[in-house]
Length: 250
Ligand SMILES: NC(=O)c1ccc[n+]([C@@H]2O[C@H](COP(=O)([O-])OP(=O)(O)OC[C@H]3O[C@@H](n4cnc5c(N)ncnc54)[C@H](OP(=O)(O)O)[C@@H]3O)[C@@H](O)[C@H]2O)c1
Image (cartoon, rainbow, N blue to C red; front, top):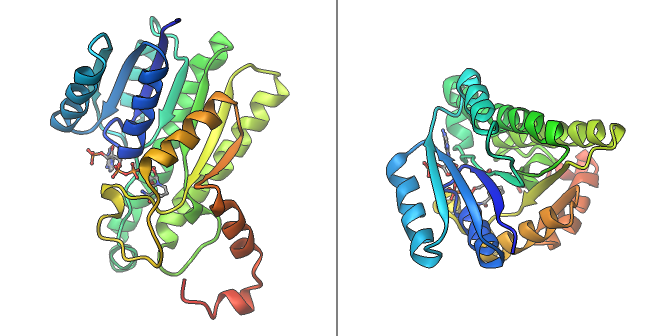
């Protein structure tokens, strides 16, 4: 079976880790995990190597907000690593109240959840377009579909990704490129990001979310909600008139 070259930005994300496990169970892969913390990256890599000892894994630590670093790393990497699949999976869920009280927190959330994924995607897509090959997945969120009082700073950064992915898909379609971009919108999922979150209802299983992500990227889907029930939920929420929506504490 042919080896796949896979790049994960946010290599320690639990959702991404489950995606990687599925990819490795499907075929041999050369893997690059990009993260901010070497110790955590090594822990993920060791676990993967125990399960799939033949896997070649490279780790890269970097500042996710430095456009120069991102650009030069991706440019150098892609000189001899033709990416088959890239998944941009980093993000952090800030406390909305802290963002309201301190615009430094607000700025950080907008940057790490919105600007940083777009910078990585732009750098990666340049090389994919050059090769006319590759599948890019970007993780947005259902939170980007409609601003809510309880998390609109995080939501706003995720809606930036939404518009970005739409525009990128349009650009690729116009040039009839073979490169595909999949925007992934998970609902609340049981990962470290949500460990302190109090929600009504159950958190989704990251394994299930990962399965849906793999399938969507492989089928070059433009957009998925995962679990799929969130498509209907968000359709209703997006279309609620504001006179009703603004009375609901959701
Ligand atoms: N879990 C959910 O309910 C949910 C719902 C909708 C969308 N999402 C999105 O799904 C993606 C994956 O999240 P997850 O659920 O798998 O959560 P997770 O396991 O907590 O992973 C978050 C990832 O983001 C990285 N990260 C956070 N802040 C960073 C920073 N300042 N610089 C660099 N990396 C940073 C983390 O690195 P460290 O390990 O070093 O901290 C980790 O790799 C994110 O984009 C998230 O917004 C999640």
